[in-house]
Image (cartoon, rainbow over all chains, first blue to last red; front, top):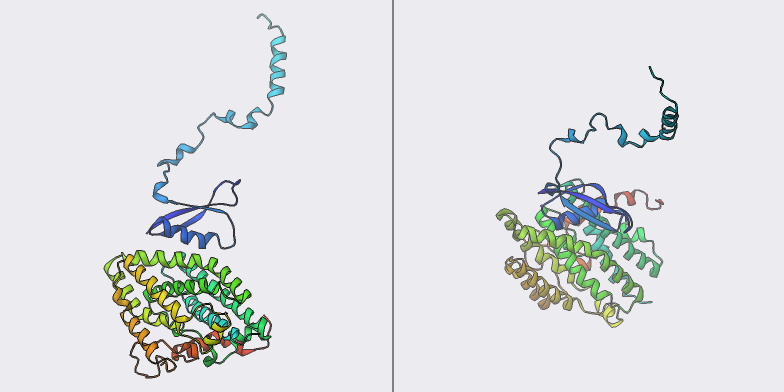
Length: 99
Length: 278
C-alpha cells in the first residue's frame, strides 16, 4: 500500500487543489478510493492522484526562510518611494556647503 | 394496469434493499478507511435504487414506499437468498458484490428494453450509476486473484459458495410468464442466467481463477430444469449443509434464518411506529 495525494479541480478554468490523501495499492484503486472520499457531493470535474513518493521536497526547509536584508522584495518596501524620491531631489538641489 | 409489474419490481427492490443492508454492516469495519467509505457508498447506492423501485411500485399500486420496504412480513420479500447471507469475511463479501453487480448489470441491460416505459427509464438510469460498482468490484477481484496465496485461496473458497448462491438471482418469479407476455420482462430469467454463466466463465478465465467454482453452479442449473416449481430453500433441510439449489426459493418468499435476524434489525425502527413521518 502506498499513499497517494489527491488533487481536485472544480471546473476546467480552476486550478487543481490538494484536498487530501488516500492509501491504495496502485493508481487505479487510488482513483476509485479518491472518487468516493473526495467527490461524494459533486465537488469537482477533474481528479488527479499522485504517488507521494513521486513528490520531491527540500531536505532543509529552512532554506525557504528569507535571508536578512531582503525587505526590498516586498511591496511595502516601495510604499513611500514617491516621498523618498522627492526628498532625494530636494537634497540634491541644495548646494552642499563647503566645510 | 399490469398485475405482473409489482411483483417483478418488488423482487428487484428487495434484492437491492437486503444486499444494501448487508453491505452497510461493513460501515466502520472496512479493511481500511478509504474502502470503508467506498463500500458504504455502494451500500447507499443499492438502497437508493431500492427506494426508486419501491416508489415505482407505489406509484402503480397506491401503496406507501416505506411500508413496501419495511412493513412487510419476511415471507413477503422476494429477494434472492444470496442477498441475505451474512457477510462472513471480506472475501465472501467481495465475491458476492462482484457476482451481484455483474448479474445486476446484465439484468439492467435487459430491463432497459422493457415495454414498461417507467421501468425501462429507471433501468437505464441505474445502469449508469452501477458503473462505479463494477469498476470497484473488478479492481478488487483482479488484485486479489493475482495476489498472495492466502488471499487467492480465500477468494476461491468464497466463490465456490457464492457462485452457486448467486444463481438464485435468476430464479424465475411465479409471475414471470405474465411479465414476459406483457413485455415487462424482455427476456426470460433462464436466458439471463445462461448469459451470466458465459460472461463469468470468461471473466474467471481472464483472472486465472479455476472455472471449477462454477461446477456446482452448473449442477444447480440442472436442478432448476429438472424440478421447476419445487425449489428448495437452503435451510429447509436444517442440517446446515450447502448443496446445489440451496440458495433457491427466495423469489417465492422462502428465506432462511439469516433473513429473520436481518429483518428484525432492518425493520425495527419502522415497526416501532409505522405511521411516523421522517
